Image (cartoon, rainbow, N blue to C red; front, side, top):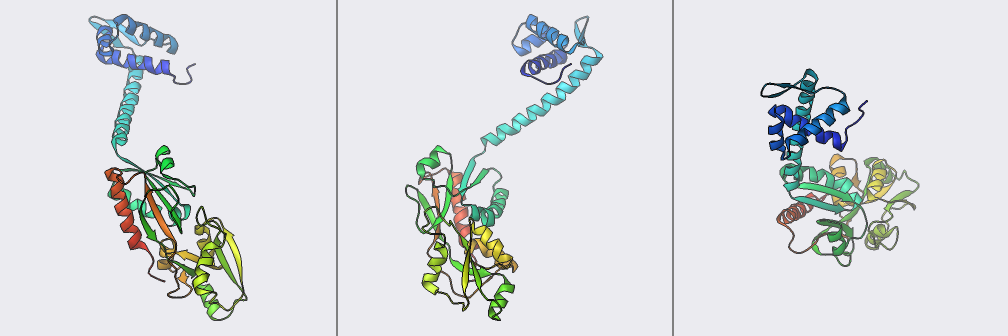
Length: 308
């Protein structure tokens, strides 16, 4: 019993389809650029494998049997579907591609949603998005085929071709309910929620909070303790759940502030030390990459929270 397609069977089915369309083994051979004998041998091999008779001879040529007609209809439908798919693949392959490598929290909390709008505006660009913290210098960008790399930190990574940088204000964010409890002096302590590895070369798990406290100290009058996560995105979710206060990055917490899930713990208490660094393989990338860079720069500048 025939159980599955293989290369030999698919090839024979293609010969059968052409033979059925032309109703003549000689014309089929001409269409396939093979001899009539080769066509005959392939049909015979197919009939032996399927254990059915596919053609009957008639004056002036051949015609398919009942079972041959059924097989021809199936082959025509299948190969037409493949032809359409191959045409679509050819179109997709001809479109410019854009490969982006971005830090996880920015990807999850901001970039994914923004890219939906970009791809709707530019359906002619195939976009691939990867999220990771790994350091990628220009040589690695080229070898791994990344057009744009977005990293976060106090300084750009060595060996990168930074085309623009975007300051990211940091300020404490908290759930509205927990903020009211602080204002009413109902909390015995306050949990500081940390991204333990905010950037690849960060010096300590509490570095972001340390940068903020160097400027503002500890304005709350209750004891604090620490809780650490490996992503800022998780710290913000913990803050939404009312488990403590997180140090919000403006781009990342904008939607949460607008929806009322988070509020600034205090007004006008931000620091502007860290940035997003956007790198490309060269100073003169392809046009579609330059267009994305311009779009990204404008989007970052206009989407930061103004609630601090």
